[in-house]
Amino acid sequence: MDHFLYRQGALYAEDVPVAEIAAEVGTPFYCYSTATLTRHFRLFDEALSGMPHMICYAMKAASNQAILRVLADLGAGMDVVSGGEYARARAAGVPGEKIVFSGVGKTREEMRAALEGGIRQFNVESEPEMVALSEVAVALGLTAPITVRVNPDVDAKTHAKIATGKSENKFGIPIARAREVYAQAARLPGIRVVGIDVHIGSQLTELAPFRLAYAKVAELTEALRADGHKITRLDLGGGLGIPYTRSNEAPPLPMEYGAMIREELGHLGCEIEIEPGRLVAGNAGILVSRVIYLKSGEGREFLILDGAMNDLIRPAMYDAYHDIVPVIEPVAGSEQRAFDIVGPVCESGDTFAKGRMMPPLAEGDLVAFRSAGAYGAVMASEYNTRPLVPEVLVHEHQFAVIRPRPTFDEMINRDTIPEWL
Ligand code: LLP
Image (cartoon, rainbow, N blue to C red):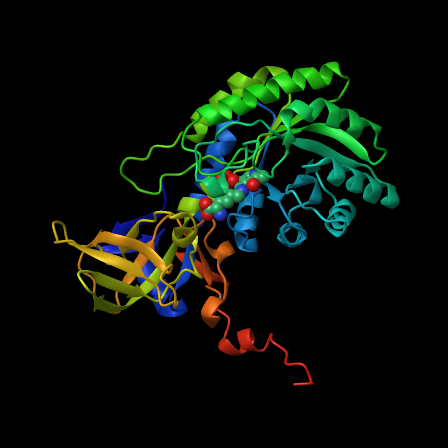
């Protein structure tokens, strides 16, 4: 459920007409709903109730500080994957003790910044990384709390580009080698083991792969404890999928996910950490765009929008489906026509949908891409020297621009021409 609904024939974001925001901000822009972000965070919180837990929002999904602040105020921690994300989380007011640091390629500079600024744990992904982290920590006179990310070799049954838990993926260390790596961790002076980490992929639409992975983590917990390691936290990653089409998709609910976690891991007495991104932010955001032209091609009709692949890359990159709805509600029973929905960028990959059935639309009409809150604005670029798409946050009847559209001058003046030219 989200808070982008038609009222009296027009699309609203909570209590604000989307067209009103478009008139003030211009198009394209992302629009997020505070109520939806809040609702989704609470669903996870309730799903894990009764178990000690921390929800570390995977801020790679949508990292505007205003969004982080909404979630942090609800008690969220953050999962960061770069020095930039760490700095952003801190700037949004998240204490270091609520930040976990994931990722296969943390640099020594990033480790140092996080150790100095405060960190809940590093999710370590390789032996060389662990050695480097130990050295950095020792040099600072600190010890780094860690989990080791294990790769359980399960098939997440999701798009190949976002599956991470198979042995062929670059992530984690093979679970079969875990005891060896933990033994090494115990010998390193700058390292303190606190738990185990696993993340098998994103947009998972079944519970079974999670269950397989978590069962392996339960077994490993017992084995590591027998080896004398203190395993007090289990970081279970993110990955729970969302419905992108509103018809036939029914991914598991956070409540079902939580119940499964309790079944597989509840008996271990560990603090459970999860790192959801998409399910928190995905349906909490839309991308609003305007029709520039309707163009007739050879046997097809194009709807040319002012939003493009640089603003929302998921269709071009993952063949992702996003519902595209008119901001003025179509009258019931209005005839539908098939359109190829495209942006103005100069490549054929700039196609959001092919042969999509749409109600009547005309030049100047507004449309909204649904489920665009996660991996939307954060993956945007200035390709074709198109200004980075702005972001707006709605809260009941108010809205605020939380990242303005840069001017052409702001974009262009970042370049410098060397004096020898
Ligand atoms: N934790 C780790 C270690 C991750 O790598 C990810 C996502 C998450 C948590 C959050 O997963 P989520 O709950 O959002 O599924 N750009 C792609 C998705 C990439 C996901 C990368 N890792 C897309 O647009 O579908």
